[in-house]
Length: 326
Ligand SMILES: *Cc1c(COP(=O)(O)O)cnc(C)c1O
Ligand code: SF4
Image 1 (cartoon, rainbow, N blue to C red):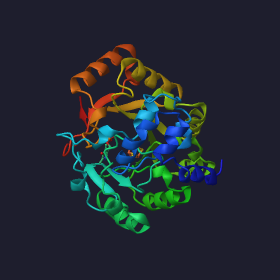
Image 2 (image 1 turned 90 degrees about the horizontal axis):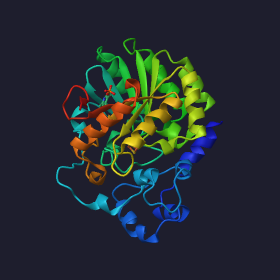
Image 3 (image 1 turned 45 degrees about the vertical axis):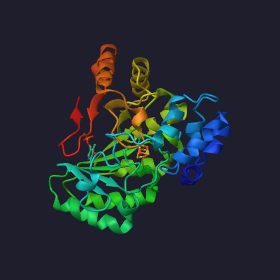
């Protein structure tokens, strides 16, 4: 699998609601609201992911995650544009240092899909895109802070960066002796499995740190054979695989789906890590559900799954030292 094929996949995303509606044989009446909603946050989805959606079904759980709808335009009290106050934990562009021993880095603002519930839908990416020049500042910051032992590459999707650039970045990090782990939060092995190239595998194998890859799968329909193969290759390269999901009304907020998700992940060599309650971001209120319901769902799946397949139900609170266990 060459680098060229995945890069082609990333430049050939579906971004026009009309095309998506036609492809999936949806009601053309959905177009007007979709066009209004993409002005706030663009539509972006890989063809691979769309191929897993059911034609003619506006409620498809994968479609729901990426399809722009009218509810996004409604301002709901209590939902903000920067619910996590990330602007306050942003010492240098592209670097977030909220928790003492781990630092979160945004190498790029590009994602393979735009998730409608994304807490970064209003994030000032353009100002926060470090570029190659920004790397030096980030590495210097990490060097200065001895308590940092884990570097987390996060969204935008860090794997939308080329293998060559990933290698150049990690080479600089190798020089920092207090870094023990490199963690990558990515949705690309799911939404574009050809991203797992021979070069990516070779890069992981030569890294001096322990490598953790957190995939973000929200529904078992996201799993296909090619995703399984991609995950298997990452595992064989020595990466530890975890999954993080967001609890989403209309997508996965029911006992059977959550159980199937954990089982599907385990069968592919991935352990559930976090089940996040929604960050209260403006435009995503329609995905939210009461905390009481979330806790009840979590208690219910705990009855049907071994402990290691039950993700931790968490919420991210501004200013806390870790995610809040619920
Ligand atoms: C979530 C998050 C982390 C990682 O937290 P874990 O509990 O270790 O998964 C690190 N930095 C920031 C800014 C985060 O939001
Ligand atoms: S950062 Fe993650 S949740 Fe947000 S749009 Fe990209 S892939 Fe989706």
